Length: 374
Image (cartoon, rainbow, N blue to C red; front, side):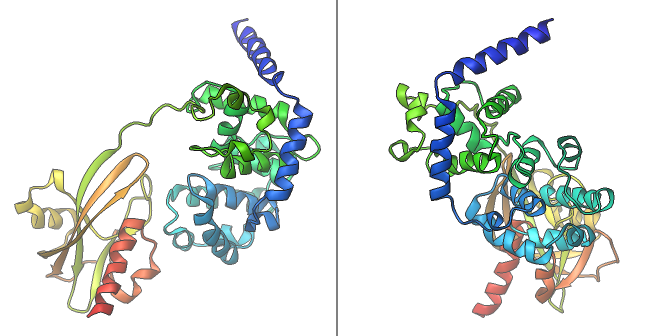
């Protein structure tokens, strides 16, 4: 009974908010603006389900301008479901190198493999079938179904929540799961049943170009007349978003361990967790290792006999939940590296063949820059 009352109450609340706008006019104003002002993005040129899927995964947590060259290269390399399904994971990670959030690439490939075998390469157009694929959450599912298959399904991302928080003056915390569910309910009632593909993209585009997080361009907004936050002078206060937890700081020494033939030791990260299966130069957690014992720790951890050299550089890399502070040191490899699945000895010129996370890309690139300046 309580469950039923909660949903009746929620529906009433939705209706009350929606009564503040003329839905048909809102759709018309929004879609007219979108058709005139939408950006010419590569994934909009051919909205087949696979291309939409790849673009939406890449766009998670990443800016459009950053994604465009990655998307173009990725689609050139893996133009079809079958091509991505058959590719080696290291090859996929290499194409993703620098884009970050690498679990997206691994989940995408795992899901695509299932589509290739279970659905004969055709991306499902059924919400239930899509929703059980690896890495396909409510947003990605809704984006594929609405944009590629023109089904009236909600695709609620940060842009959509920001726009609707302001248009409907919703003051609930958008980091809460129940608030996201509420927005999905609003979109179901607002979405244009004739053109859900354009509607969802229009709301996202409005959030990206006009209804921005800071200093929204309200005077240029095509739905300003419908916006309850604008009327109340609250557009800068919405959406309500709880502050993220403070990031954890971790310090490492990064070892550029090299032999006499200019071969460097690189390490493959674990199969799960942060930056899984990417390659990096060996790292020593400074907090856990006293400086005088560093060479012994490296031998015990990696089986490497080294002589620590001079400090080369230091850099900082910020993740969503932690910050790496890296001090880069040269190290002379004393003894030949034993065969290992974890470690490889790679010539400097071949390091670019391996997928590295961004901070280690910078360290790798500095080796080439140093060589050019000699």
